[in-house]
Length: 223
Image 1: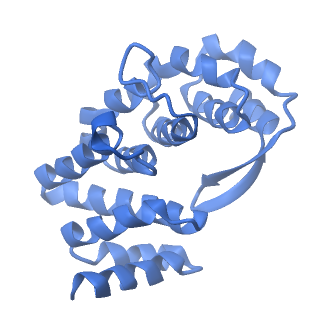
Image 2 (image 1 turned 60 degrees about the vertical axis):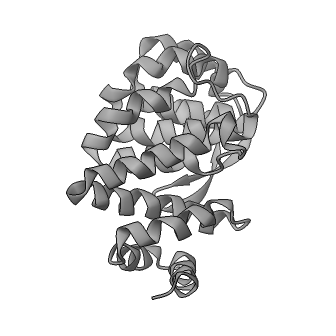
Image 3 (image 1 turned 180 degrees about the vertical axis):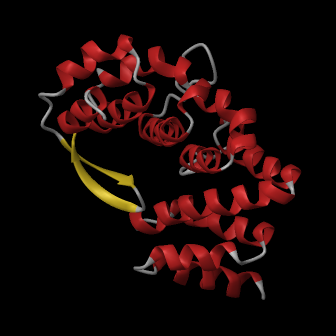
């Protein structure tokens, strides 16, 4: 199958209303061939296509890591490069994909979780772009809800985001904080329970409209 034909096929599968079926078919494609088209869809103006591409990248690279760890590392390094100032790009979708991959693959998470945390650490590889910070927070939250022990130390780095003027920052930080369940974040989460700003977050394979205060409340009183 040629590159253009493969890209068209993957786009059709990303658009599938029953995306669980589309995802299954994408994972049956040769993994290393599927990676490049998926990267290109991170920039799609259709939010759902972008998020489906992030999800598919997570599944494809996790599958790759099961039998070809070095090839999976190559993809992780490419995602990291996209977030580097020297890359010349902005890195849309890259932190989200990193979080999705690590949520799905334990060995890759063990190797790279600290790097994702470093993007919210002002003394680390701090990402300054406010919109890209949303992607970092989502990726961190996705990983935290799957493997909280790997990112427990990120709690203090979430404090500024819980107080951000950007409602997406506040909501995503609250969502991530709920997985970390640390005492240091509870006072700010308590204050956020009265935040009635609405945001749209990709969760459980769907774009869901949430209220920031509700996310904070769920973080405080999760089962």
